Picture 1 (tube, rainbow, N blue to C red):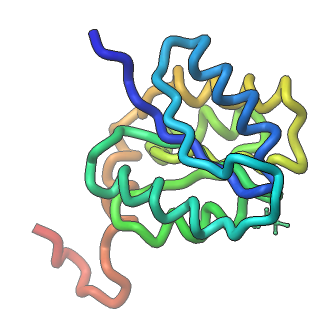
Picture 2 (picture 1 turned 45 degrees about the horizontal axis):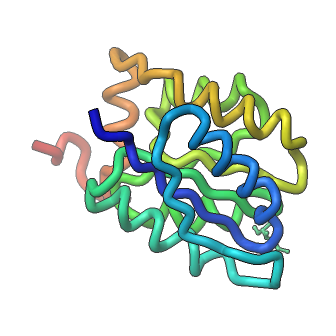
Length: 155
Ligand code: RB5
């Protein structure tokens, strides 16, 4: 079986933790596709969030991982892409719930607020937790409903 490719990216604030998560992904048997940043020099998070989210939007990959200082900027940018559900998770419990209830397909880590150990634990939990479906399926589908669209307009 080919290894699942998981794109991972950060800005400068997430650079150090990203390096650890690349190693963790590799150790867990995934192909970690590190799309940058490749140094601690200052960068702009949307330059990394958009290319990664585009891969998820196009269905080229199932899921991806982003990191910035708070996780917020990366999530804002990634969530502008249809079909992308980027979840900021700072505990394994939140990461698990983002999978079970929201079917998150991008994990976003607030690198300035989680330790290396916690970052790896959050990643591992997120990778291993499935979507519960059921009542959550309908809710997740409604995320993509355009604002202002008449109720029940979806086929
Ligand atoms: C960079 O200083 C910081 O603003 C960025 O990493 C992120 O936290 C933005 O949301």
